[in-house]
Length: 238
Ligand code: ATP
Image (cartoon, rainbow, N blue to C red; front, side, top):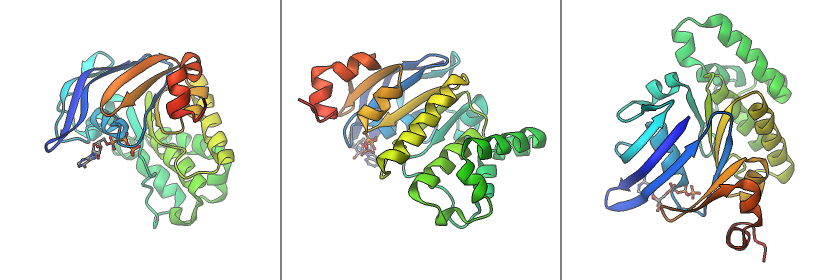
């Protein structure tokens, strides 16, 4: 479904990605792990059309995403939960969710949007309780659920998540990762970028390890969890 080949990204003179390749098949949950500054966010931003320029090839459903702006990429079926959630604090929870369906509303898919709004409030009951509350008053975990719900409101076939566990208590991380597992069972394809390698690899089918702009390892998630180097560098185990 997603094919990235030899992706190179630069910020001015700084090279953030040096020829990275990665693929995600339909229905898979794939984890991309790596330390701070490895280039994980850069890769997701390239897929979403948020970088001014990159080299290489990014294909979704066999078609190139080169030169497409973010709304066109969302329209193709790719939606992202950004790092730091980036919800709109002064807007209500409901309005934040509806913003995720902006393109669908413009296309007058009002019935579909309403139906998915209900789905999101079922998926995250706490959001139903807080539906009319300003999003800025939610806890960190609730804001992360809102960010996931908002991304899903675009009705994507590929969901990208950038560090969803960041700053959250272990129990909340569990809840969010359990939800991702549930979503995956419904057929959603997921690419998750995480520093919390343990949590991400536990729910993933396959994983990739990125180090300073290069892909250094790839394999079944269960194998990566047992890999000596991954254990030492990313799982804090001997
Ligand atoms: P983190 O987990 O800390 O978010 P990351 O793996 O997502 O790290 P990126 O944010 O993709 O890494 O950063 C990759 C490299 O590109 C880093 O060296 C970073 O300093 C650099 N970089 C990222 N964004 C910019 C920018 N807007 N301008 C200049 N350099 C940038």
